[in-house]
Amino acid sequence: MLDTHKKLNPIGVHKPVVRPWIQDFTASWLGKGNYIKYGKAEVQAQIKALKDTGVDEYLLWNAGNKYSPGVSYK
Image 1 (cartoon, rainbow, N blue to C red):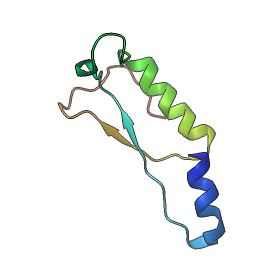
Image 2: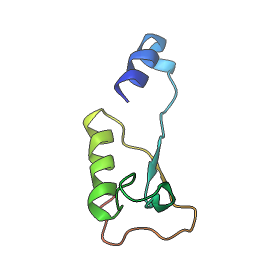
Image 3: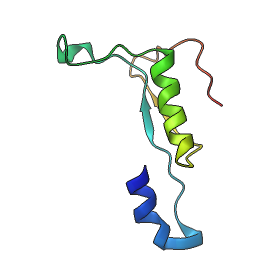
């Protein structure tokens, strides 16, 4: 996100709204040792990282529409 802001800041007041996708699934098909298990903590860490860079909007991705319970989206 820092790189995105760096590229968009020169645009000024008319720069686009950034809505990145964040992950809410475990990519187990990558094989043992090549992925992390996703859940509430991992999703909230992504949200916090976005907020820390000034991004308040995002899209949540899980192709199976099975999202982690208990996530605070604020």
